Image 1: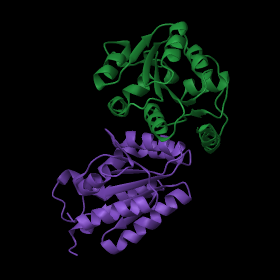
Image 2: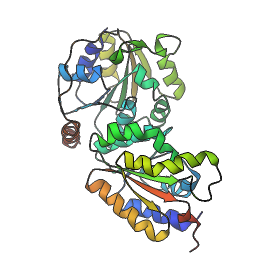
Image 3: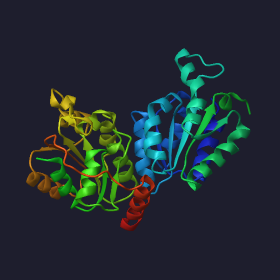
Image 4: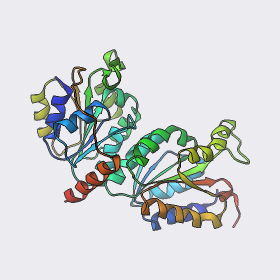
Amino acid sequence: MNPHIDSEIVTIMLEEKIDFICSVPCNMLAGVLNRLHTLPIAHIPVTREEEGVGIAAGAALGGKKPALLMQNSGLGNSLNALLSLTKLYGLPLSLIISQRGGKGEKVSAQMPMGKATPNLLKAARIDYVRIKKREDLIKMRRMIRKTFDNHRVTAILLLRTLWDETH
Amino acid sequence: MKRIEVLKVVGARGGLIVCNLGFPSRELFSQSDKPSHFYMLGSMGMASSIGLGLALSQKKRVYVIDGDGSLLMNLGSLATVAHQAPHNYCLIVIDNQCYSSTGNQPTCSSGKTDLAEIARAAGISPVKVLGNLKDLEDCLDLHHEMFLMVVVKTDSSNPEVPHIPLLPRVITRRFMGEVRRSEK
C-alpha cells in the first residue's frame, strides 16, 4: 500500500470538514484508519455497516458531517438503512468505500459484490465516483462537497489501483 | 403496563427522543407531538444507533425508545453503545415479547432470551429491568445525567392511533432546529 495516498485521502476528508466517522475495517483502508485514530476527530468503529449508517444519521441530526468507511461488501449490509433512513430524511452521508472484486482480486467471494456495486448504487440513486489513480482524488473532494452542500448520500469507490501506483 | 403509558412518561421529560417505527412512534405522536421527537418511519433496528450518533454529537439528553424485535435486529449496537457510553444517552427498550406492529408474532424475548443480560454481557452498565411506571419515573430521575439502559416489560396491545402525517424531511428540519436551539 502507498502511505502518501492514505495521507491524501485523510487530508481531503479533513479539509472538506468531515468531523464524524464510522468505520468497518478493510485491509485496503487500514492505512487511512490508522491515521484517523491519531486525530482529534470522532471515530466510531462499528460492528456492522448498517449500524454505522444509523449512527451517522444520528450524528447528522446533531449537526455533524459524517462519513462511513467500509468495504463494498458493506453496501449490501446497509442498503435499507441508507434508503429508508438517510435518504428518506434528507440527511448527508459520505460513503468512502474500498472497491474489492476488481482486476487482480485474489478472494473469489469478493467478485459478486465487486461486479454488483456500481449497479446497486445506480438502482439506489446514490451518486458515485470511481477513484482509480491519484489524479482522480479531486473527484473525491468534489463529491464530498456535493454531499454536504446538498444533503445527499454519495459514494466514493476507491480502487486498488489507486494505491498500487508508484510515485 | 402498556407501551403508551411508558411513552407518556418519557415524552413528559424533555430532552430529545428517537422513537422506534410503527406503533411506538404513532403512539408518541398521538400523546404529544413535539419538534424534539424524531419519529422513525423505516430502517427497523436503527433506533439505538441513531440515538448513539446523536448523543455523541451534541450535549442534550437523548432518550431512545427501542423495542425487543428491533433491538434483536441490531444486537451488535449494544457492544458499540457500551464501548462509547455517552453520559447523555438513555436507551429504553420496551419489551412486549412480540412484533406487535406486524400482528404479534412472538420474538425470542418471549422465550429464553434475556435482553438485559445480553446488554450487561455487552458491557452496558447500569441496566435496569422495571415493571411499573413509578419505578420507571424514579429510575429516570435518579439517573437523569447518566448513561443508562432500561428494559420495561409491557403487554402487547396496540391502541387506535393515527398514522404520522408529517413528511420525513419536515421531521428532520424541525428536529434539527430543536437540537440547535437546545445547544448549551
